[in-house]
Length: 393
Image (tube, rainbow, N blue to C red; front, side, top):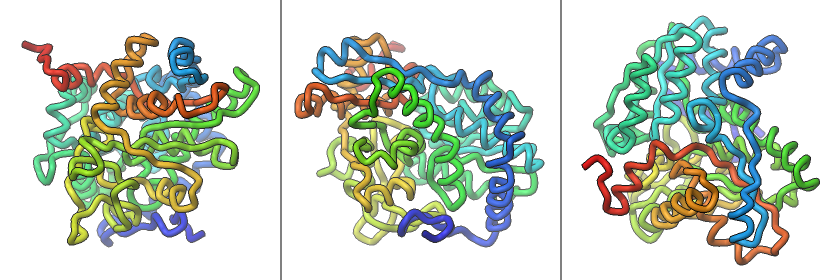
């Protein structure tokens, strides 16, 4: 396999203006990733600041209701409320080793932005966040949290004013100020080495969950389920199970208003091969091959592409990718809240929805591990509006 590629996917398709920064990042990561001192510092940060290891929770009432055994990997209990802090702490520590004093980041649902602002405050770096105006409207609480933590938030109005446009603006900003700035990309996307760095830092999820479920149940799960936009929580959830052929890996994409409509973000279900944001992967495209506008109720999943390792896992049939509609996700959002007392992020609710609607087709002794990638405080107002209630009236 070529360096920086997963099968036919990946690579680095970037202008010369940022190639030096990419090469600098790759060299630094290769230097520090196996360095005992760096790993010791990162482990201490994850333990003291991120609240790791995150809990593995047996959802007993949900299990009894569905007739299968469901365990939740509780990334929602991490500091800042999602899996994003795992990647952020590693990349900011790396940026400091590289002598950078400023980070920039993109965000969709705002969780990566909040985590980036938190990490920057913790480790003493400047922080600027790029967020689509449409996403900012849906996630006003997270915009406030980022600013409260000291970050400067740039609202992006171009294109669909969502995550893809925030990524584009962050890349433009980086190209103009690389000497003191690190681009802290939040998902397993972009030019090499970003997909590998993010995968490695998020793989702590499956490193823990594999050991935890073996300790709790004495066996591996039959299925690992996670939501997929760009795919950081999913690739982290899958990584240490990829070699276990008995374990099905299920990625739940945002089908929005349906994959038979243009209003979806189900990349692997509806997309095709292309090049965008510095990588070759699957993307939602129009008839002319231009990146298509996408839609999801979830600001964290409305990205028109998917990380190259997910595309590869799809190609070799190691992982399955399934579409989940807005209606199914909202139903699951309410279901988990009422049956387990856990309000999930609407992104994570896509994974819960898949388990809920397929459980009856599975053997009764099935063991299912679901990554709960984040908590749903940020989504409550949007979910209320979706159901016709304005809680701020």
